[in-house]
Structure formats: structure tokens, C-alpha cells
Length: 284
Length: 91
Image (cartoon, rainbow over all chains, first blue to last red; front, side, top):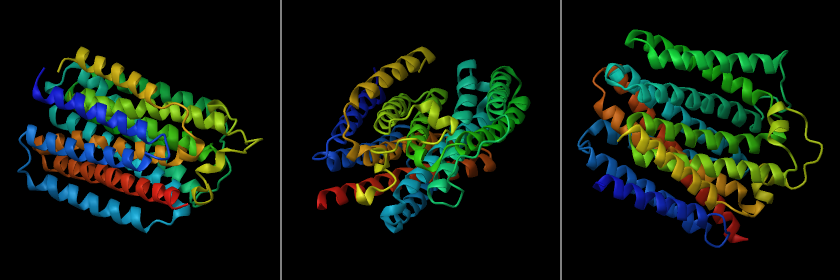
């Protein structure tokens, strides 16, 4: 086991510990800071380990992103926090998809079947996370009507989307480099559309659950991206977030007395007692 | 790294993630979700490497955007979570 693998294990354990601390009120602040610190260390490790710490463009992008993210986080009103979390989450998913695009465009001929397959998968999950999160955030912010929007034959359209995506992912795994570029663009458009179809039919009161689910997706997108480029640190942290996000989604469903299927089908909540903690954190 | 090793890591990390969240009080659902949202910005690691290795200008530009988005997710996510948790502590 090399240096990078050891660092990966240490950081993954610290991040797990941070999440654990975040599930108790007394230690939650420490848990959050531990998470932030381990991410900071991870970035430095990746920069220096890959010998890319002297590329100025990278630092510029990080600096710009950090300033924008910080300002957005500081300016948002408490009541608007949930939609801000949704928005941030979508951006993370979009970032994973963009990484997959860059890797496909740059290195497709040298990629093995595993990398080709996972890169297409990262595109799907990443773009669905982006467009789904934007719709969810828009609904919470009341820029989009809050009631579920169900189109005619919604289930059929969704299933058809997934079926075509499945075919495209296969085509992107086995085809030529030129075909892969076309397939990737098609997968991008269709996945963005599917994210909208998936989130638009969820009612406003159920949005916290949807954002939690999309949160899990963005972790998954990161992990799949890690599979594509062969980075164990990205795989492990992404997988941890993906799994923990699914669990949290389940816990929230139970707290709101809803099943995930009901939520995703856009059936209106009959009882909604304990679950508004996310909609009104200031009153929580 | 071999695909098999990577999948193994994926499975182990998934199991660990499953184990770590249990009986979260509903008061903490929001900040916990927010904290994990910040962690999903981990994809910045991939975007840094992909951008540094990209040769074509348009790919560098896509990578640049990816790094920015992931950093907004990370920094904004942790900052928002910190603000939420401060609110809990003050009460």
C-alpha cells in the first residue's frame, strides 16, 4: 500500500468520525469543522501528490469558487437555507458530470471498458443531481409552483428516459471515440431532462426529502467519478456521503410518516407533523 | 488502481456510511444533511486532476468550471452548516 492509499484511509475515517459527531447536538459543530478540515487536507494532498500544485489556473478556480461560495452562504437568510443547500448540492453534482465530460473528451481512446462505463454513469447521476436540485431549490424558494406537477403518462415518460439512457450508456462504453462524444452530449441533455421530470412532480412539503435524496446522488456521482479516474479517496468519501444520504432520507421519510415512493410519485401528504424541520429551521 | 480494488473500496465505504448514521434527532436532520452536502463537494479532487491533465482549451475551460462549482459546494456547504449549528447553540 502506497502513501496515497494510507492517506485515503486516514481521511475517510476522520470524515466518518465527523459525520458521527454531527448526529449529536453537542458535538455537531466540531463534526462540521472536522469535515471541512479533512476536505482542505484532501485538496492539498491531491495537488501535491499529483505534482499539479504549481498550476496557477487550479488555484484561481478554487479561489473564485471559495469566494462565491462563502458570500452566498453568508448572505442567505436563515429561512432560505434549505434551497441554498439544494442549490449547492446541485452544483456539486454538475461538477462531477463536468469532470466525466473532460475525461471522456480527453482520454477516451486510452480508457478501459470499466472507465468508459463509469464515466457515462457519472454523467447520468451528476446531471440528474444538477437539474433535479435546481427544480427542488426553485420550488422551495417559490420561484416554481409548489404543488406537484404531474404530466400525462409521467411514469411512462420516466421509464422511457431511463431505458434510452441505459442504451446510451452502453453505446458510450463500447463505441468509438467520435461516437462517445456524441453519446455524452445526448446523455447530458437527456439526464438534465430526467432530473426535471423527477423533481417537478414532488410537492413542496416533501422537498426536504427530495433534497436529501439528491444529496445522496451527488455523493454517488462523486464516487462514480472516482471509479472513472481511479482515485480511492474520491471513491470512499463519495460512497460514504451516498450511503449516509440514503439512510438520512429514510429517517426523514419515517419522521414525516411518508414512504419514498409516495414522495416521488407526488401524492400529496396527508399527515405532516414532525417533518417540517427543514422547511423552517429558524423555528426548529 | 484496478477496477476490482476500487469497487471493493466503494463497497466498504458504503457499508461504513450506512453504519455511521443512527438515531439522528430530527432537530439535526437539516444541519446533518447540509454537512453531507458540503462533503459531496469532494468531487473537487477529480476536477483538479482532470483540469491539470487536460490539453485542449475547451476541456480546460470545462474543468475550470467544474473546480469552481465543486468549491462553491464545499465552502458554501460548510459555511451554511456552521451558521445553522450556531443558531442551535445560541438557544
